Length: 136
Image (tube, rainbow, N blue to C red; front, side):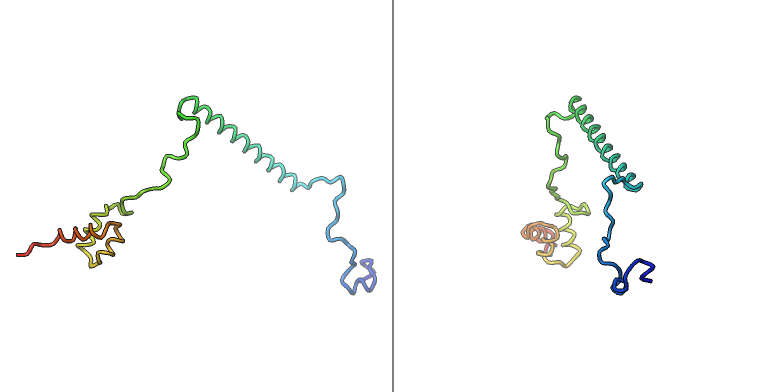
């Protein structure tokens, strides 16, 4: 077996020759494989597509400024405010009505209702007192 692979008995016993490089060095006149060519062409096409899209976007933006769609030179950051202030619960019920429903239909404490609705403890207490039945 050692003769078949041009090795000495010691090299065959060690598992093979030591001085063989793992990867062959590429010659100076290296040409790309077919896979590498396809990959580089697709990268080139992506780059050119991105450049064309950027130029198209800039031209559309310039045309919009010329038409007067944006009064100032700077594009608008956003139409929505960065911090959304919500005065309603996700269900759409205003906090006062929600607190009134919770007072009427549950046995939650005033502090719990305050934490759920976001109203002040004093407002909820006033609501509870106003909703009492008069003494007969």
